[in-house]
Image 1 (cartoon, rainbow, N blue to C red):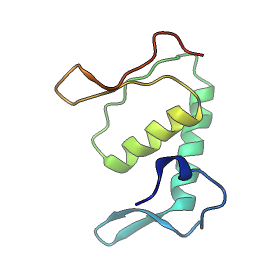
Image 2: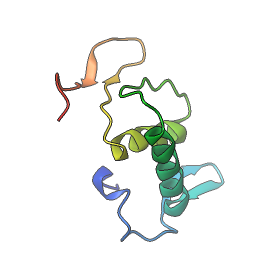
Image 3: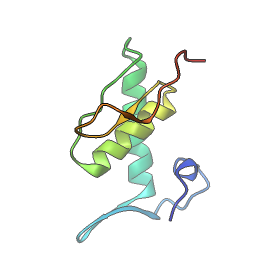
Image 4: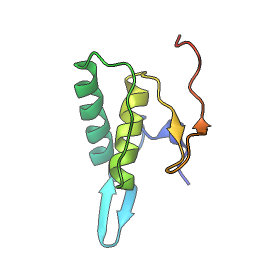
Length: 93
């Protein structure tokens, strides 16, 4: 298992698999490029809060890590429930 905090480190092998979907293997370089691209797009947006409603697990992971890389606040909620999985702090720091 890969520790989440290690996923965006430059020290990882770029060919290391991050996502396997049948015969398709997405490597770390592709994942990191996608996350950083999304984070760059988020920097151009004035919004400070986002709702992620994405069915594809890989796309969701990329968006979630992009929000984290952008240091935006996010709140994880269960699909049909409003109780937080990871509560958002009352005030950002």
